[in-house]
Image (tube, rainbow over all chains, first blue to last red; front, top):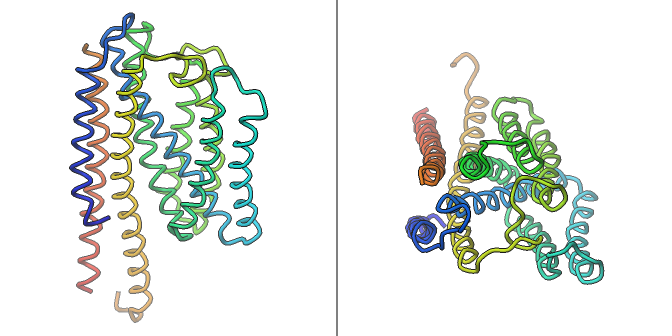
Length: 285
Length: 39
């Protein structure tokens, strides 16, 4: 990856530029909101990317907690398998809310199982902890973008910057949870910090489905979902939205890769410093 | 249009700001590695 990084960075920059051009120039103008609706092409992909990163943080934290305990590890593995199988069967057997496709439920279930086993295979126990810090930090950055672009879109459309409805409030709570997670990691010097942070992350992740499904369950000022859930969107807009999301996913991957490398090198340096301090004879410091 | 440009600008200011902090942390770490090598 180190050798491919510059090439991937150039490709991502090109894709982001193309996505920006599509969003500002090619995308059709929305009839009621006008040009300000184009904020959508940055707001929604940033929200989806933040959710994905928080989900990765959740899986990494669960694995960090269960890996040293063989029974919990086996149990978590079977729960991940059960989620995949349950989603595939349940999607076609049980009635789903209006607008929800059984195929998308089954795919989401299988993706959860796939991500769980991918992280399990690719990361060591310490690696999962480093991954958790990385995804939380980058997730907070994307969530900040959502919380800034949202009010900038709301002001001209709703006439207000902010309203305390379920979607907006739960997103703010999600941001606060992960900011506290990062503060815990930054300022706690206890040997149990990683375990405490992982536990906080598991509870924090419970807010992600609440944020996502809040507009399906509650009456909110926030618009309905653009994919499924009764909302509708022009196919050209959807196409441009997905290109923007792919561009932001590539960008998030690059940032996460850099942050993960920084974290692993930092840990190596800390270990070397500790070793050096141990090896130095007393009284030389 | 002003809100649209403000939103796009804010997005990139946040991302570039975060990337800047990453670069600064990298350079600090590099300095620490150099100091460790010297010892």
